[in-house]
Amino acid sequence: MTAKTNLTINPQRLWDTLMETAKFGGTPKGGIKRLTVSDEDKRVRDWFKAECEKLGMTVEVDEIGNMFATRPGKRKDVAPIAMGSHLDTQPTGGKFDGVLGVLGALEAMRTLVDMGYESNAPLMIVNWTNEEGSRFAPAMLCSGVYAGVFTTDYAYSREDRQGIKLGDELERIGYKGKHKAGAIKFSSMFELHIEQGPILEAEEKMIGVVTGVQGMRWYEVTVKGQESHTGATPMGLRKNALLAAARMIDAIHQVGMAHLPGVASVGLIENRPNSRNVVPGEVFFTVDLRHPDESVLDKMEAAYRAALPRIADDLRVEFEEKCIWKSPAVKFAPELIECVRSGAKQAGYASREMASGAGHDAAYIARVAPTTMVFVPCLGGISHNEAESTTLEECGAGAQVLLNAVLAHDRSFA
Ligand code: GLV
Ligand code: MN
Ligand code: MN
Image 1 (cartoon, rainbow, N blue to C red):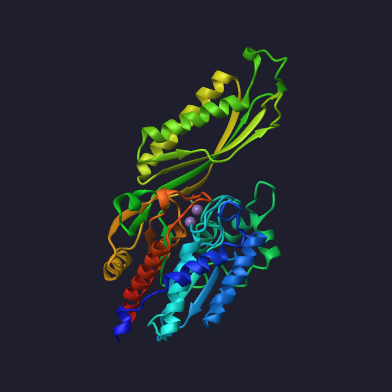
Image 2 (spheres, protein in one colour; image 1 turned 90 degrees about the vertical axis):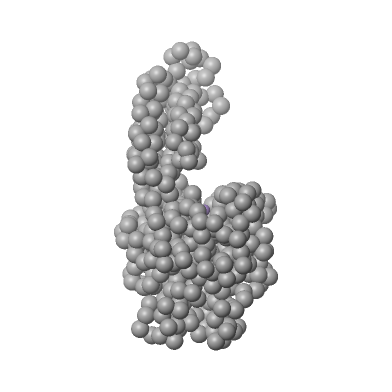
């Protein structure tokens, strides 16, 4: 049937849906604050479930809140082809990071339902819990549980900075489902996402054909000095934890600069007691190192670890440091990458291959099923920012390529 190569998504409907869900946690600056398993997250989950059910899909939830919406195919003997991403956001998140992947999949599904198109394999949309890792570290936590990287109990025990546990919050919002993590199966996964970097825009390419994700490591550092009076403690006698942290942060920045295209960042810092006339006694901060090559990441880790004691000794402070997360570099499945490449070509979009700088659920899912991603540009490459911006045309292009790629893969089940 000709519709097979000719199914056209509705970009305006996708855009309206993106704007509709942006109200769940919408911020005055036009972004979204929808931290994972918060009340706002519950509202968007309820909405998502209802919309999938309107399409005749069955929605199931696993014990760590991952949501799976399935539409049957002609064949009952094969597992679904999944399209998935996340609906949680950063505290000052934009409207597209993660959300486009779930709602782009919903638009693809709405298109198929409107056209009465029956796929060979069942098709599935997945909303992964806690991709961001902002409220509960680490990132990609519940796709990680699904893939067997973490246990369910580990995920439940993760605490936010207020000491609230993820497991308790899941229970509270009613999304601790009955299915064991990993029990709801699919045969492959495609994830649509904004690039979150500047390359596609700079090269005027509409589609990124994503070949993998760089390696990532997260650490936590606590610097311990001594609280004392700012007026009465001579400069030479201070044990200033914040000054030591400042020098460490600069040293971490230099680690990134010395290992390009590697990146090294400190994004969260807590200064205690944070009073203007107390020399800071304790500082907590987080470290994020990334590189596409694990052996270079090892070197970055060594350089970062070598810098801390030197600084601590100079300033007579103590510190504790630990690695809390390692996500190795990932290569996506060639047969699925080919579906994205052909899907972009079929829709007439210029594309280029690229690795992802950001972490994605696809990185963990790649351990248990063939997986790949589709990127679209975002304005100025800006993401994790309320000003994150992507056009209606770009969102539509991404959803179209996602649908084309899924249908190309589905043909192998004919
Ligand atoms: C997830 O958004 C990450 O790349 O940190
Ligand atoms: Mn994301
Ligand atoms: Mn993100």
